[in-house]
Length: 544
Image 1 (tube, rainbow, N blue to C red):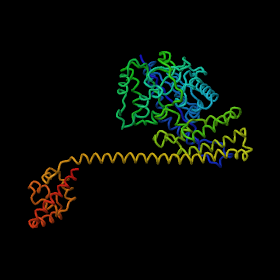
Image 2 (image 1 turned 90 degrees about the horizontal axis):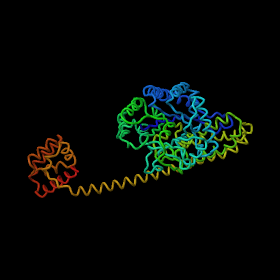
Image 3 (image 1 turned 180 degrees about the vertical axis):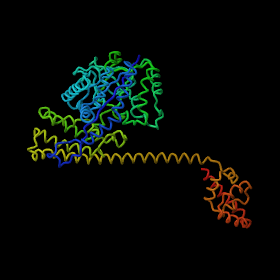
Image 4 (image 1 turned 135 degrees about the horizontal axis):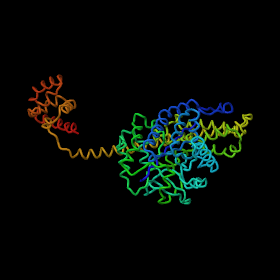
């Protein structure tokens, strides 16, 4: 039997409230409780609870042949405890079956792996303990925030004792190779790496309800057929998906839950695949090769890189200012400071500052509480300024005025940077529009040139061709010519042509036509020929 690794990411950040400059030193609470509560409870009802119910039913139906894996961020677990404890209960029911593996990651779903080895390891340990506390199992498999991975991150994970890592099967690291095998770290050969099959994963996560997709609708039978067609030598399929796909990104009425219910059974009955946990999968298969990832990758956007979080000056400034406080924060025995330190590290805050959404569409707007990345940046920097004041003052706001002056450079820098970034984006947009217009003009000119070449070869039309025209075309011809000229031109036309034209004349035009017909005999033959040529030339334009 070959294996499918069916893994889901579960994460929600603590979203920030609108925090203004004048709140600094006065109010140190940064979070939008109403928004956080309403989002968690809404997604619990639309996604987490119904999806968990389906998963539990599939486990009961298929037994040991159906296994799945979750990574639930520490911030999501905290919010479930606070706003939707029934979600924790439903995950515990899944954990009790033994068919579910819980993975570890950074507690805050943060970018710590890119900024601080010590903070990264602290968060992973914190997360692992939280998972064990809530679900009674100690994670043995690691997956980083948004599947961010590099050789260096792999080394840090190996030092912590984890032997299995999940990441993205990015084309630029695989080259000609397939993601449907187990790979290993280039130095730590005992660390096995599972790579997401982004084609099949994204068919479910992003394209499922897209009616413009050539494969819509996606059915369990069709998906099983795709798996059956995969070369038998390929060991496994890694389906790594945001759990919010079920019911939130893909709404219930899209049929996503029916697909989820039917797909595993259809796959297992018609193919040689079974659903296997990551921890068991790496015991079953040996790596076929090492995989080198010198620069960090992720599962975000087409680039599969870090630019969703650290792709512009605003993001870099905010992230660097935050992690500059690490040494002072870790030496502080202040629970509120430590809590805020975790919450402010959530990668979502930097994701909201991404300017790529101007071109990448709705992906960067989903769950985004800000109308623009610049407002996200300003709001975050206001919060960070107050947090800096508290850290510099060892958690005490007594010397607020002095400390506030020290953080003014952060606020001024944030404002200036947001303005510069906005202008840069506008400039790039103008340049892009200019290029699009230039390309459009080139395409139009090319089309006109081609049309002219084709038109030059079109046959000459005569009055006799009017008999073959539709009534609509005849009426179009009548509107485009002078009735006097038409009456003259039709003097020598066949009855078939005249019978096609005259019934299509308006009453006014008919009266004018009849009057001129009686006077045609007085017109020179040369004039008749001239009017006839003019009408025939107009025929060519009508047919064009």
